[in-house]
Image (cartoon, rainbow, N blue to C red; front, side, top):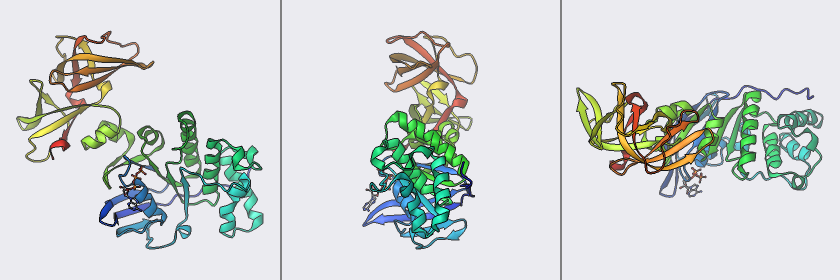
Length: 370
Ligand code: ATP
């Protein structure tokens, strides 16, 4: 085994009100983010939402028009990329085709003038980290896409940067390989203790990898939180829709002793959350596994329960259970997930009653009317 310990404390990364414009287009608009030392943070969002621009500002490829970047509490200013103590991995790995795997991985050490005698053990340790010990003397063309991407990861960690930036590193790989490499990246993160800032538009990938996720929308962070916080307590409809599946019910806001409700399909439905002052319409978000499918006409049991009639429009078999697609009386579509062993037996065309607890419904401002 390698005698070299690759681990080192990760650095904190802090963005304060970073803004970047391209001409009169604002790509990121006052982004603030505090990444803790050693944390795995993912920038998640749709195409064009500003994730890569944010990463490029941290890397020093792009200069911000306003705001501050701090690494470990030090303002970075216009320090060039190679002096920022960062490692980088991108979707297109760009290994040197005429160099062996070992030479590719040693390259950043050579660039940083690490003496020759010290390079070999560092390369060996990096190879071990990505489990490619037996491939040191191969050329990139003799490797699969996944192996090439592991070489790219080894090359980015060989000089032990305190922050690792990754931009869709698995984007070019097929799903099975992606799943496996996600687990490898998690393991490498745990072993190194390096701070990871990872860009993806794939919510599943973000959920698997991250300590916390920053959800980007139109050049700003809409919500920052753990996977569980984003899923259970989304703060906006955008976040609710982007992370996982849900039923979204919309209706006029009514009040019952000060507590807001929405009117939907002739019922008054309660939820958890607060609305902006004076909101006239609002939305309720309910996750599919929180909805129970019952026989039509069956009334909810507990006093906190909510119920609506629905028609089953689709049934998807999942192995671990079923997903039911439903239509509510006002035409809204709904989703319910049932666990194997607890199936309702409802089929396409059946009239059913959907019930859920008001505690599991998240009340949110309706962004379609703003
Ligand atoms: P993707 O997932 O597609 O990579 P992203 O969230 O990473 O998207 P960015 O690459 O940060 O998005 O781009 C944000 C916006 O800024 C986009 O609308 C993009 O067209 C614009 N943009 C990025 N770089 C430039 C540039 N060099 N010149 C002009 N516009 C740019």
